[in-house]
Image: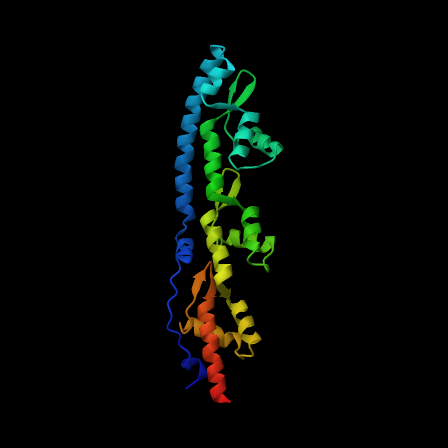
Length: 245
């Protein structure tokens, strides 16, 4: 019997993190976000109508605050106090470009609290591409930023475009870092196998994956082998090598 046929690992690895990663549907997120933006836009329009009335009535600062409107500085401080830090210049730039909705009372700009809450919710649910890369790189030292962007563009790292920014769900980043800690890519698995003195060619190893003799998961078009599966495989290979000797 050929050596490969002697190896058939009957092992099921149940992994909620991998299941969660596979269940992420960027199209569903886009549709949900589109509905949320429409609702937010309608609410901001209502605030805009109220703001015009406040201006006509020469409202005081207290009246403005009662309507949950924040000056640019107050809005910036509110976000910062709630754990979101960006430079004041970047924050002002988003207001100038209209990516952060605002209303005008007289010559001053105000941001409705609902807009600030939406920004905070986005921050709690998503990472920017750079933030996601910096977290992922801690567990996958080999990847560089250009390669990571390539995976985002190909869809192997789930992402959505919200406004002018491309964002990555936090669940996706959590799952990807988990995979980096618990699983081996084909190349990494072979490196570990070879480091133990076990001889197997890449095409023979991949043939076993193709035939389902080595349990693995497919994520973003790439195959990964759980650490426990790889340990069992090496144990079997080592024993077969001893018998051969």
